Length: 248
Ligand SMILES: NC(=O)c1ccc[n+]([C@@H]2O[C@H](COP(=O)([O-])OP(=O)(O)OC[C@H]3O[C@@H](n4cnc5c(N)ncnc54)[C@H](O)[C@@H]3O)[C@@H](O)[C@H]2O)c1
Image 1: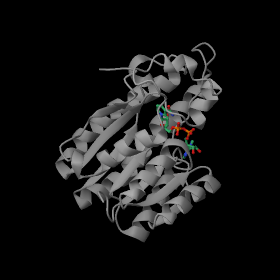
Image 2: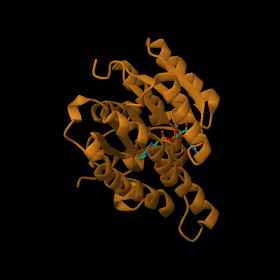
Image 3: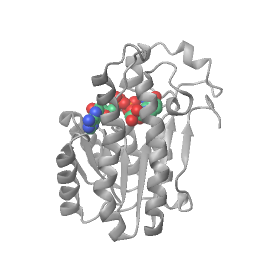
């Protein structure tokens, strides 16, 4: 197993990509602290992780709440003594034109996607620096590279910023043996994308050379790669997981 005994925190892991990443990490031997604003959903992910013989902690954490994030990091460190892996997956999306986007919409989307990522990274980086090891994985998006076609500009801007933040943080933490990378998914089936497409993927399929919509596990396996020793010499990298939809 590639992540035996490692302790991971995954935000927004009550469903979708976050839950799949929790299960893929657990399959490789990691224990997982599952954070989500939906406690019942995060408990469900925990049960699945525990069903694989790993330890799990279900925690109601809103990543935009600075105090709650700090307290949650302290709780995990108290219980497990270490955080080896942080995956900043919690995110929200909105479909709206720029003219339709209110200032409150802007703050809400940037608040979860960008500020939430910043707050969680900042809260764990002290511990990772002291450990002189760690992995941080942020969730970008193809929308943050091309400018969202189906999603709002505020979502795309937030993801572009997350990918740039990833590089800055990678530079800052490299001297401490902490690697920071991002995954930029294309179209992956989840509640978020079902909400956008209404379950009709026809348009997207024609844009994806590999000829299928992504599965959450596709992202989960790349997260395992970025969390483990196979990616020791990667930092500040953005890995596309998009079936060839966008190549750069
Ligand atoms: N699905 C895709 O095709 C796709 C593509 C590109 C990027 N992404 C990114 O991947 C991540 C996961 O997406 P998904 O498709 O699984 O979405 P999803 O909506 O299915 O799941 C998101 C999870 O985040 C949680 N969450 C929302 N706000 C939160 C907050 N403030 N604090 C803590 N948890 C919160 C939700 O409760 C939910 O469990 C997001 O960052 C998203 O932007 C997804």
